[in-house]
View 1 (cartoon, rainbow, N blue to C red):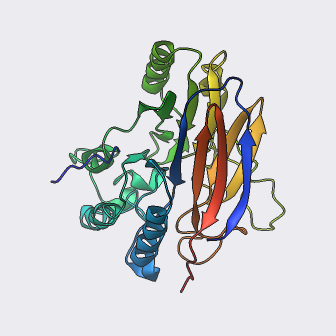
View 2: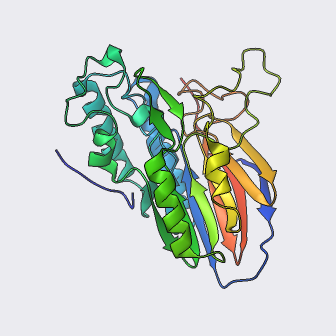
Length: 294
């Protein structure tokens, strides 16, 4: 099986956090999430259209926030492989490097509905890792430090919840100590660490529960005390949302697929985010790419 690790229009108003100290950094990057690629509902064509729009944006690299495929959690091997193959072929359209975190729909065969045995060599997150690389890690760019977290925790009941596991917490503490307290930090997670989702006035909006937010977010964020955390990039809820607390922006960048290729999701159209870094300031814009659902 091929393994490929991808290193790893309309505008909704930009937001900016001023940095405490000026640095020489100046760059742009893309945050796209929840492609949910599939052949149905023109999902493949929509993803290609989004990637074409991203390629027209001046940027240095892209970050994918997970849920690359429509679903592998409940699917048999053949269907999951077809979806990962489709995503792998499509993401090659992107002209710049892509760093990726896993989403819950990227986890393979965990549901009993899939018929996949836990002994399958690609069970769980191994399929994702085989195609897209390590489930967590970090990288540096122009003095900024980017941290990729895996926030999808598979439970003994063969479901999932938002949680950063103990292995990552130990790694994160070491990574922060190595990086130092002055470097500006950006965290990337699929499931949000902080969100107002669940409080908006839509009659069918689900309440926040363990599958919609990271249940040990306080424990995760406590590790950043005394460090220069600037932003947390999030996905999963398919809404464009900005929450700010104590100078940290929690930025949820909608979804490439909108409402799973059926139009806008609670008022957020299909799109992606453009982030601009100048010194120690980071700004965020959510942009649509003109997609029309079937």
